[in-house]
Figure 1 (cartoon, helix red, strand yellow):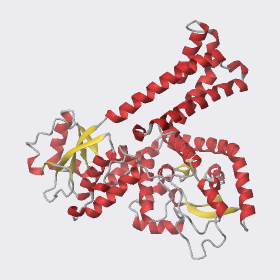
Figure 2: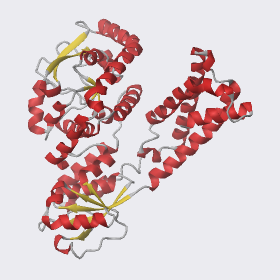
Figure 3: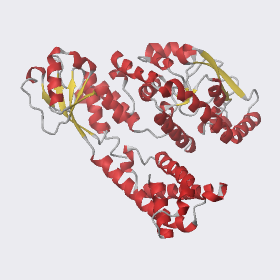
Figure 4: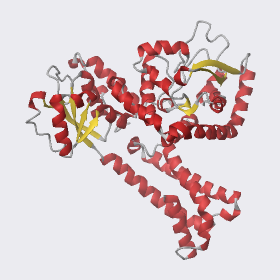
Length: 473
């Protein structure tokens, strides 16, 4: 809204009237500018909670870059249609107003990320519950875990969070006044000893929130130890949405065609690179598993030597892969090898956004090792996805688990808006040459593994490894 508001104010300032006659001709430029500016802000990470810890010079650099590109877009609209051209005077005044409003908006947003906090008490009945509460307390400035409420007679806290009360004390317990949310697991909602108390807390104005949902809010993923059949059933509600049933296909075809128009020069360069740098076919074909277990052939530019799998199928490597020829590594880094999959999208084998399709020979293995792995086969696989933009290349079973946690989050929350954000994240990932730095989620799950391995012997826990991941660089 800042772009149209600024252009309108600039026009009023320039022509010295509240509603100048030229204002109607600026509509096209205002609409396009209103899409460009927030998109660039998102790509720059200015809308994430982690933006609160950006260095000032990085923030200023993104502000100036976003404003300059928005100005260029407004000028470009005028070069396409002279009637829609924004005059120099209007542009000068409008950009000055926009710069002030844009800075103020993100200054207030930064204060918001630093101030909003949920103060929660967590019902715990197992070590997994305690681990999740500990991760939440370390992972986000938005959530403060005040303490634990033990609802199992056999549970004994092993980590750092204080114990507020035990099961036998619940009827008489008075929660700390700072607590405004109670975190629960699905099984707690059907425990006769708890249902009455939970309802009473809700009538007193307390929020009751699933522990898994809290992790989703903070990590944008759902840790596998917290996934239950009930959670999976709630996640399946998305399948009935109009967007999932009808509009997603229209979105896929439209975006795929636009990408083919924009990326055909990159595809042509990629074809020439493969032809000149490696003997053999230009395109690589491989069988993948699609929705409901249907097999299809995926297309890529070949980036590996012809004998890459002479010893059988292998995991893709997150580091330097000796099977990839040098120019192929470049094609992979900037995702040029993925462009032919746009034809898979047009054929209907894949969606633009979704869980990455896996090879059938790996599905059997992953099904045994990763809980609920076959859930991903209930939705259309994608060229890009939430796991692809939030996690680096996977090369082992641990990586497969982490990516599956991100895919489950997408399956539950998929929407037009989330797909649009994934496309923006994909653009940023491609421009930066891949997702190489660990984000808050990866660090948090590292903490989970550290805590889980130390839960049996808490005296050996190295607390220096449990640094807040969103409040420190």
